[in-house]
Image (cartoon, rainbow over all chains, first blue to last red; front, side, top):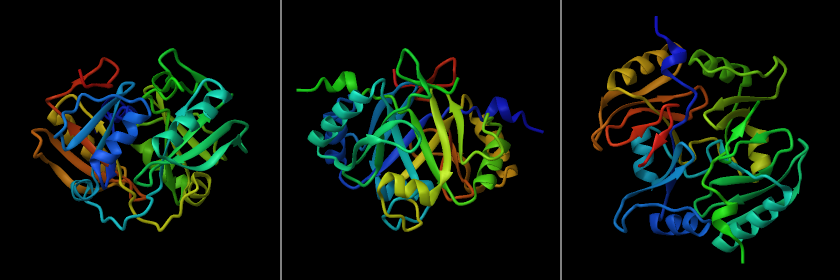
Length: 146
Length: 146
């Protein structure tokens, strides 16, 4: 018997996004305001995200390393950045637009009572920019289900 | 001009995984040891993950909501749970196997000097179970790039 709760803690450590052009993708996330210590020749780019890491890596190598086939599309994963106020969603959407994102859904009220927008990064990864009145944000910008 | 660093903080709030059978997927993550307060009829399942949330939602609805086309494959996203010791990777792999995951790569040393395994969840989402000697884990199990 394994002590599953102790060992597989619900603490996601890394989200790796497969990208086609590391330089372009790095530039995009830096334009959002994220910073990295990665050198110019790094082949993986790490961004600290709270107590987690967002990594950018060549998509072909990531597919191989993850033991999956890649047909090039979306794979059923959407990321979200929650923000303190609806007006922050508007402003963050303009930051993403200026960084070169496709704004797939302009900021608007949502069916779940919030206010959000969707942007698509240069590799097709969708992000929601969201204000959720039902959730509390922690002092560090984290989310607490309460 | 927008204060990008303030507004788009590198703090990912939610990772939503699109799933085909919510009940099956919920059962899988609960079998890993994760807990949720979602009721039996909930159509989105939220798991607190550090200061973030892992959400499970119908894949078709997630695709619509994310404004993307879904061709059913992998989409260039891999998640990782980092663990304190190599032996924890072995044990966590057995927990995932017992929960019904496909172990796509058995625990082994990696090219980057760590030790890891890959499991694939019931909807094809790959997870790495990793020991990384180059990174520190925080007291709460988070990752610090230092």
